Image (cartoon, rainbow, N blue to C red; front, side, top):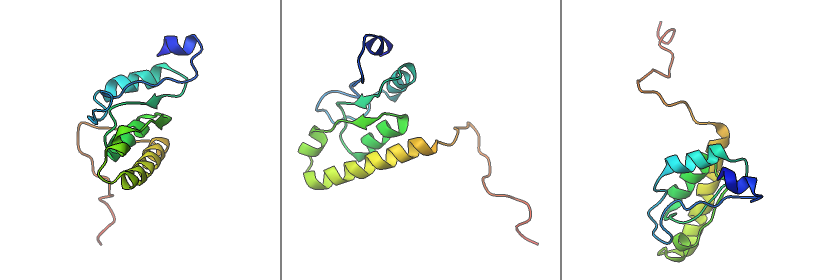
Length: 117
């Protein structure tokens, strides 16, 4: 990805999965590496099968998701297109909001003091 940007590519479009498979983002870790290693926009292509796949791509920091088969082969294509729109918006907002840090242990999120007198 870095080399593509260095030779002048203005965006990178990695395959998130097998073309037309609808399997989803098969390796989000590879996608995360691409996002961290390049300064050009990353647009996910291939593998997207449903709205949650689009949300994941956007939450990871992708600029866009190319969709074809997920909408074209849906039982209700217009409804799937609407779902994808909302998924992309939700994923981008979540990315911009910033995910809470992951922890390997539980911690209370509500205050324990001063609630009951």
